[in-house]
Image 1: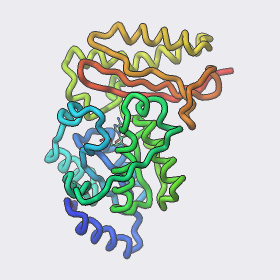
Image 2: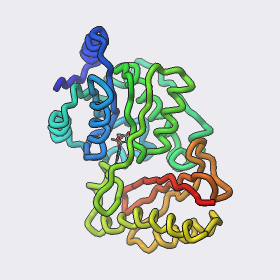
Image 3: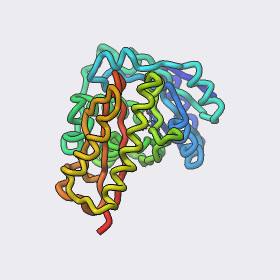
Length: 284
Ligand code: AMP
């Protein structure tokens, strides 16, 4: 496995693979890798010739400096995992490499897709995501890039950027990998105390309750949200950042429970922010 921190070295390797006619699969990550990330790698290995992973905790997408400071870093374990899974190249840049002080920042934004969910409660987050992801796309020149559906809004925003700005690559969404109790795997889960980990298990149970309530005939979005909120708030130290029902394509708020809806939430359990979502088909 090749590990590079330098842009020139990265580009040389990519150019050489391209010259040989090989396709490149790319998954950007912030490290502290887990089985969810490895699903991206596995999907990439099945669909492309060379698999590239970047590990970079991107400062520009954190709206809360404390969250950035506390973000877990486990580079040695990450590299071992990547090697075991057969990743071909890991790009491990530092902040100066990605953001030289001499360069004037450019902000990309897709306001329509960012006005709800994390875009609403984390101002500047998606501008940071689009900034780093577009840079990484130019550096790695992927044929396909793989993103987890756990970060559903991110997946939609990046897909829209690629489509609108004609990036020459395909975005592939990978289903959310979950723990045995249904909690979505996340690098942030390691920061949960035992008590808070128990509270976090309310999240998958809330999705089960939502489906049961809808199957039971509830079609009033406000009542449904009230039932789900009350359920979540039984958890110790749980604070709801948002709980929203939106259209899965344009991410606009739904007025009626019909067709397909995206039920998405962000909660703080103690200090740790967790997100999850599910697309739920509404029976007629
Ligand atoms: P992160 O390191 O959290 O920025 O995530 C890097 C990539 O891994 C993103 O495309 C995430 O959506 C994806 N990812 C994170 N957690 C999971 C999971 N539990 N299942 C599938 N993909 C995930």
